[in-house]
Image (cartoon, rainbow, N blue to C red):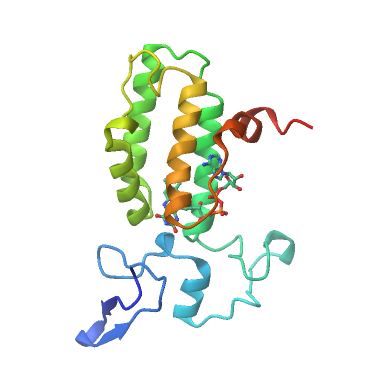
Length: 184
Ligand code: FAD
């Protein structure tokens, strides 16, 4: 619960941080942990008429983050899921041991460097659960091949969807969404 969180301001004056704004570990607002809407509310910027430095065609919807701004938690998340699911969708059908070890290392490092620290900490906890552990070499394990790794990644994303109150994705359609395109 980030509502009512107080940040230390210069001169030790305390100021309420608007709902939804997540603080970084240094006590300053964390841009990549906060949605643009909440960030804009805090900085009192008008989100209905963003002033992009590039032509309007490079922006998305009016209430969305302009493309030439640092990413908010949502833009960063969407781009990251695109990368993660595309990596999973192009993982070998049957992965050799070397690939499995490589992927485990990647996921572990990813979970430590992801810029939204609250997201990263929850993800770290999720990958440490016994049923979610990535164990290279285990027959039929999450890393054994594309199908199982895709289902693992889908489960990881659904965990966040549930946390955010979003609809769960049907993991049976994972290949269509991320590899083959939708069947007609
Ligand atoms: P996204 O959730 O980004 O999804 C993009 C697309 O992926 C969807 O349109 C859909 O087609 C597809 N998709 C959806 N679910 C699945 C699935 N299960 N499997 C496969 N494809 C799917 N945000 C927070 O506010 N708090 C957090 O704690 C948080 N943790 C995150 C942890 C990680 C590791 C990552 C990568 C992101 C996290 N995010 C978090 C961001 C959040 O998940 C979303 O990316 C963001 O809210 C934007 O959501 P969206 O509705 O645009 O679609």
